[in-house]
Image (cartoon, rainbow, N blue to C red; front, side, top):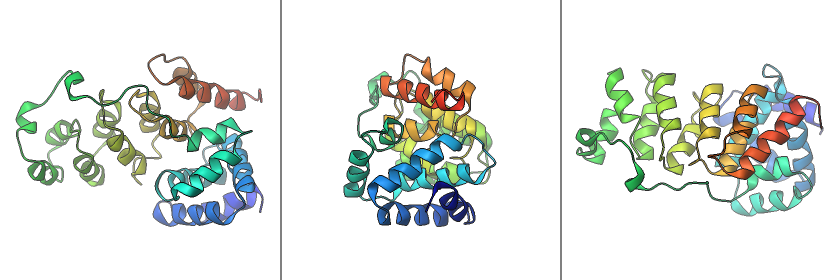
Length: 241
């Protein structure tokens, strides 16, 4: 199987769980070195956002973040030793900043005074202003319910993805969202958040445009390895590697 065949096979499946489960199966079945080669080729070709390569890479990235067992991730990490763009997807380094309640600059005290159960129930509301307030919640389940709410818009998702400080678990929920993970502005917000784990930021980077990659590469608040990854991908976009 080559990258074009893999792209066509995955792109033919429904986006979301079906595609990501099939991608996970392939990443487990293939020899680690071949899996790395295919990922590498798709990363280099997936900036053509309407092509099958972009759809296939999206499914593979979701599989890496959600479905692969740890032992397989370790195997792929070692197999990608010579391909740093792919290896970055499997890294387990910490974000440049970690969540700390004491560093929250603004807290909706009225909302935080409610029980967790109340806030989770309210996340299903039709009230847009209330959704925007709840998007600042540090509980990943509250944010998950917001992401699934049909009244949720890009505004609320960007509030959650851009919040500083933010829990890594909340940022993971945003990346897992079938509805929002393909949104370019959401991916950009994830990549630029210093509380995003580097492997998640690298996955978000993979489908960004050259201007977005330049912005990430020059942002000094995020982890150095994320900036380096952005420069590598930018070089691919410009045909420099």
